[in-house]
Amino acid sequence: MSFPISKKALAAVALALTATVTAACSGSGGGTTGGASAGGKVTIRWSTWGSAEDVALYKGFNDDFMKRHPNIVLKMETVPKYEDYHPKLLTQLTSKTAPDVFFVGDDNVGKFVAAGVLAPLNDKLAGPDSKSKPEDFSEGIYGGAKKDGQIYGVPNDTNPEVLWYGKKALKEAGITEDPAELNAAGKWTMAKYLEMNAKLKAAGKAGSLFWNWYGSTYSVIGGFGGKVWEGGRFVATTDPKSRKALETLARGYADKTFLSADVLPASNGANTQFLKGTAGFFAGGRWMIDVVKKGGDLPNYDIVPFPSETGQPIPGAVAASYLALNKDSKNAKEAFTFLTEFVSKEGQLLRLKGGGAVPSVKGAEQIVLEGNYPAHAQTLLDVRDTGFANYPEEVAVPGLTKDINDHLLKVWTGKVAFEAGMTELQAIVDGKIG
Image 1 (tube, helix red, strand yellow):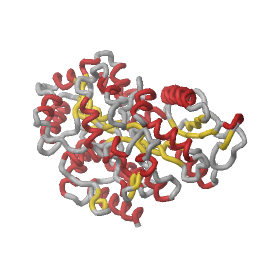
Image 2: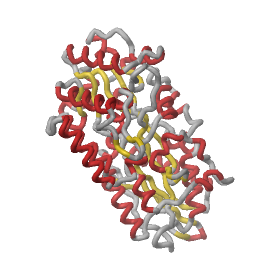
Image 3: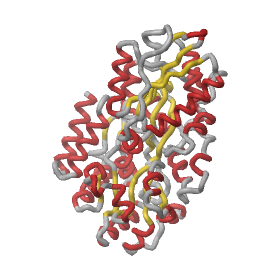
């Protein structure tokens, strides 16, 4: 699932899988795909990362799929750690031993597209055998999985980045306005958000907790009206509004108005501080429901999109991952059958129920809205429908997103001064792009 890699994904991969399905294909097939197995059945291998809970949900889908397609045997291959997943997959693709279908993260998909190892999907998705048409997914969340109009990966689910807030913490800081109500009235501005953060800081609390990834950083830049990429060039360090946003973040981290969840001690981490009410806002996705449940007081928490200059909605960051088809699959027809059903409305209704993700496909919104929690759960869908996955220009360059995040963390933690940090950041990006 999608977290930046979203932080849902990072949180999920921190859990050890209870079991790992062997990567070896069964039956007589070898090399790229599983081939035919006993009784003339076709074996389709597919791979993913994820927590034990994710794998359990996938197993339910696998079992249901094989009942409906008795001629297809699914072999699921899992890798416990996200950071190990893509290097292993690239090795498999190089040696022609890769699965037929596989997950690709939003920060890695660009290099897989550029490597030419993914099958183009436009014709298949638009064809009569498809259960998931190209238009069933919002354009913005294709991100780097789409190039020159061709789709190479279908979003399997998402997690829009929003701001969770604790009503009690805001009240204790003397804040009487409700962010979600301000948003509904078109008055949720960056100025108002920063004002609330200042009041929280004055009350001895942190204003906002952020994980250090593109979702939070680029959402703040968007809230200032800035740009990250323009004309194929990284402009976040030179666009005046973007630079102001980054400087505001740097100053906020320096005076502890903002806290980086990445560097907090385990004994007093981001989840703990948010649940204790020592921080007012926490940027995250739907996976945060599991976090706030531990606090016990569910009505205390709600969500709001990132603010804008004017109070009018702006595109927000959406963590995504993609399901792609191996270009060299020997059983492309059966592999596509699995892919299209996995990402279809029916497939997502089956495998996302009870999870912490937001469906990528239109028509499965009840997963988010059932239970009416949080009160403004519709916000997650609104951000999904108008938001963006990481920029194609960025994810097309291997390791670039990580390099940007790593360098910014040095700025946030004061290891590099802001002005020098911006100069160095531009040099890092320009050097990577070549």
